[in-house]
Picture 1 (spheres, one colour):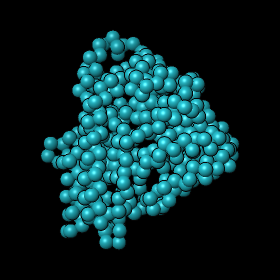
Picture 2 (tube, helix red, strand yellow):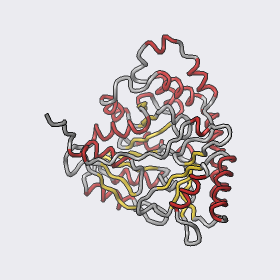
Picture 3 (cartoon, helix red, strand yellow):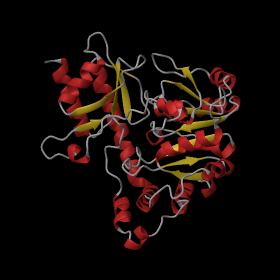
Picture 4 (cartoon, helix red, strand yellow):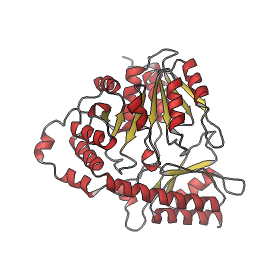
Length: 369
């Protein structure tokens, strides 16, 4: 008997490649901790109220299935954004929301009806599209500063390919660029499909696109608690959109998709946002420091509105891969993408002052042996 064969698109699939993941024991090692600046976690801990909420769960809460629709979290998120619970969908990380959007709105196995993106972008998008057997139309950004095409040009490219969805990261990954609300609204106005604005990093930016959801029913916002709220270990995200879109996505959501620990922790995080806001401000201040230090050492660094910076090497510096490997030998992890458009760049998460100083010290050893 021959072995079962996967679908052709799965057999040909190149899986998503995450950044290196040392354990928490490695990052908290008492004598030689790994400085993890490669996957954009918040360097500061979550609010005490989050841990208290988890510790306060009785055994009965673990014995029973969790609330299927995460209603308490949805009310907390609605209060935080001035919306209704009907505008909110809680998901197992932002990635589940992306999967739901493709499942619900994209045609499978057809040359049209797929997703539109810009390039470069979050590398999971094409993996999810390939998993579902749908197409990707990736429109290049400027190779120097990653400026996207004008909204009418970008929308025209996606419309020409009959894209059902378009994923637009803002602030952009991996550059940290932030587009204006006017740009986003013009893009939504001209695009014939559903515009998904991935705001995974928006907590570190001066503005978001909530107003678009209040005015339009063709825009979805993706939010994550991994970055701004220091809860990457819980895998909790949520979507914000018109109630009609949320209801459609909810029909395809996994049953009991979020466990009770995640629900109470996420609810406490949004209820105690002042703690998170303090960490956002600390990251912004360190982002400024890190940008200045890297520029002083010869790196070209774009202004970032996220919790990372993208640093470009020059002829006077070792190549990006050599710097990445040299820092790794010194227990400092940064992200190196071996792709043509990013081969001379390193994405560096903004850490604590101590972590950033260790990064700078490691760079100085490499640059001035």
